[in-house]
Amino acid sequence: VFAIRGCEHIAVTPSASEIALITGYAQQQEIPLDRVQFIQESSEHFLPRCAAKDFDLILLDGKHAFPWPLVDWFFTADRLRQDGVMLIDDVHLRPVTILAEFMKIDPAWQLIRDFSGKTLAFKKIRTGIRDVAWHMQPYTVASDGGNNGRLSLFRRVASRLRRIANL
Image (cartoon, rainbow, N blue to C red; front, side, top):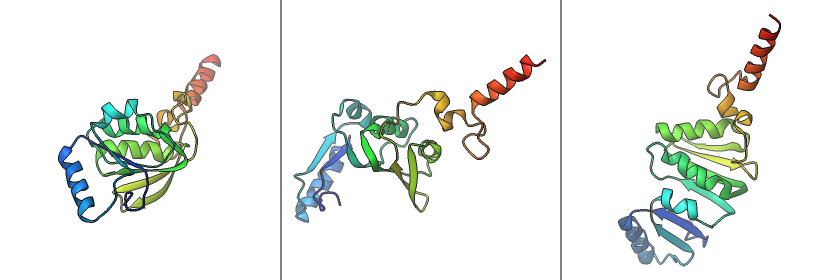
């Protein structure tokens, strides 16, 4: 789809056969691949040294075992431009669910579309997302795992210290 639309596209996969199948299909269908860059490498090896940035769209659909969805997110989220879209696929799998739970309550992201519970689309609201201290991150400090009734760890500790001081 990206090639048909003439978009610049980086596809990261360790699978040579996957690349061969895609390029073969594109040739048969006369789809130009001149703006598509295939990286035959695992994402955890390529992404830390990738220099590309200001992406409009990032699709995370790689390894689904823990912690790879989080690793892929970590190395791509700041490369996505503000107001860009990140798609995360296979949300029904626990490691991806963890990432989705985080993104749903983090103020840097806005859930904009749920594709039948399998794929979620998030809009990036803030420019930088990795510059937040732990006590400022709702997912980390939520008293109930990120659901309703959030109370930060800082507030709970402060409340407990006030009670101790008043004894």
